[in-house]
Image (cartoon, rainbow, N blue to C red; front, side, top):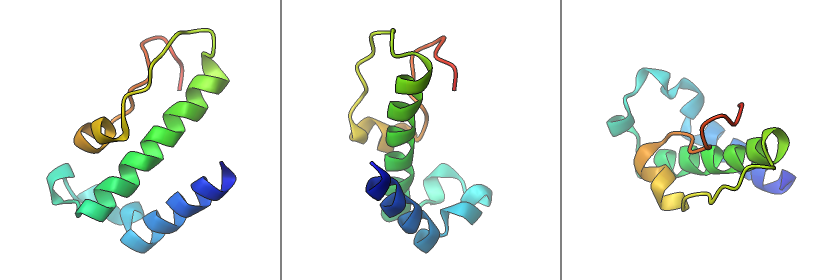
Length: 79
């Protein structure tokens, strides 16, 4: 898990996503979009385990995260 997070951090740093706040979602390159989606996907997994493991939740596929670029945690699961 740590290695995956390090990889995501490296991709984000290389792609410049840390400065992408001025970009709109449609302005992101495919690589930037994939990196952001993976970051959200992994963060949702971690947040679910830490904050609401008692809630049944089927995490959407990574493709869904790529489309929406938003968290998909269930309602009531604190981030």
